[in-house]
Image 1 (cartoon, rainbow, N blue to C red):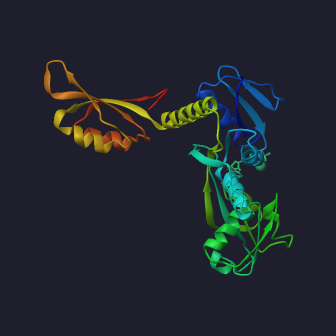
Image 2: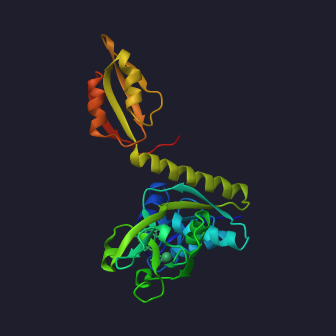
Length: 297
Ligand code: ATP
Ligand code: ZN
């Protein structure tokens, strides 16, 4: 029984490099030439499918793969499209990653009088995310028409196809170039691990859980630091509250000194200079901040 788990990632685009690096950081060695659509996991039972990002949720839905890395924008749109046809979705959004940040926002032509969602009643909105936009209108009791555009959504107003657009933005430059003004954001998106919630064999389930645990470990490591310092014994509580995301510190006695100890902590959030200065103010000295390479909680 040679069971293998399939992970779908974007073949070529904004998410590709980060997705491959993430899987490599999880210890997966992938053999893959540029033209192959499937990469082979040499040291673990995983195959990597390189596909268009829009196809990833559907592949999981159809049980053709078990895990995908895709923008939350794409996964949520797909879930809402199934919901609108009363179909259950067979996947869940599992872990938010630290790349692929973008926003799904309205944009209004500079020349129009529309300046907020309150002006959208009866208007036509062009978008590549019709279900997400319709869902937003339903939740906010706005009666507006949604027309689907699969690309170049920014052109819709000048082509007379819509009065407003709702599209992905990361910088406002494209909008500016099309004489559009940024409006309200309806979804903040980030690349996300999407996981099948269909029944799996115990073998597959074990490996799916393992890779997700490693992905979560990599995410924590990206921010985490190991901090060492000398500190007065009675300042330990203050030190722990100053350091975000820490568990109980390790406190080590110093040879021949009674009122000062060595304190070691793993800090799971970004450590800023300001924090180090505050530590110094409560009596810490010889503060060392070192990166963490791997973490398994
Ligand atoms: P494909 O050929 O795979 O369909 P694409 O053109 O749809 O590619 P990309 O432009 O590579 O895809 O975007 C992939 C994902 O990256 C988006 O779905 C979104 O989650 C994220 N993203 C981050 N920033 C932006 C941005 N400024 N514009 C569009 N997408 C962005
Ligand atoms: Zn796409």
